[in-house]
Image (cartoon, rainbow, N blue to C red; front, side):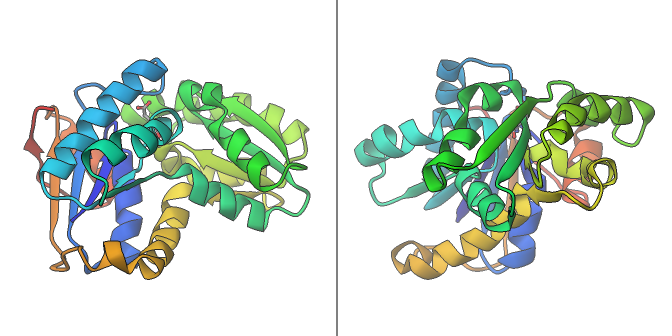
Length: 267
Ligand code: DGL
């Protein structure tokens, strides 16, 4: 199975893209809804929570796990790849969303002035900046933490005035830097893509990590038959969550664009 992990619901939007591009594989989704948000937590806590989730998904039979959560990809992925995997699951793989997104942003940017919007934790980790600069040391990166966007979306206010106000506050400084490409560096922000596109207008290319990661995953699986041949292909999906609140159905439906049934698990 392919495991997909997120701090909550947002990763369902990433999974949706995987299902569109690679529908025949079996997927196991895990959202840590009991402990969301990760975006305001320390490096040590994000690492601990993510490692617990990864261990759980491997124990369920996943061979490959994608960290759909940008905060986990930024703060925990490297340590998991370098320390946890070689010790516990040397044959398995954990991948994130930052590197595929960065590669695509660099391919599409002409001026090499790239904006990044993300959670406080992702911005503080500088993960996007570091990875962009590794691939192109001349690139100029302008980051903006957007701590209110996740709660606005989770409260169902994504179409309202408060979303417009906050987007204006967060995007205006980035536009002043004359970016030509904007990375949506958080699972939730794809929900706001039409509003963001409207605000930045057509001169700015928007990079959505879900779409990009799905394309790059297809490419990765072609290049790695040692992983691909171990994946089951029955088109099955299972959804796990660490908390099931009355609003689960509504929020999961917002990201997945269809109703899902989830099982509650403890990590
Ligand atoms: N999933 C997180 C991310 O992509 C956003 C929600 C949170 O803060 O946990 O960064």
